[in-house]
Length: 156
Image (cartoon, rainbow, N blue to C red):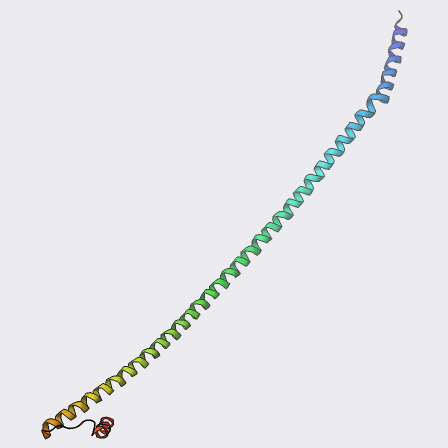
């Protein structure tokens, strides 16, 4: 065999191999590389979007927490004001109840004083009659002198 024929045959085989590779092997490899490149680019873009969305979510969460703290502080202030109002209302109600009880007690005391005065007047009248009876040594008729005794009660 001749080196030229062998070299020519190897060159033809190499050209056929290159043509076969470019026709049947190279396009699927290039397509796979293109798809892989696109997938990587999409993944990086999604990562960037995710990072951006994370920053936005963090800002929103911070703002929400700030708002929640403000609302909680407002609610605490309102609750303290309401507690103060309730205490004041309770004090007012207790004061009114105490005043009512005092007024009732004073009225009851006045009634007892009047009853005691009437009982005292009755006892003084009875003592006056008993004393007059002892002085005069005769019996005084209480029914006959009822007007006199009534006048005596009113003077006392």
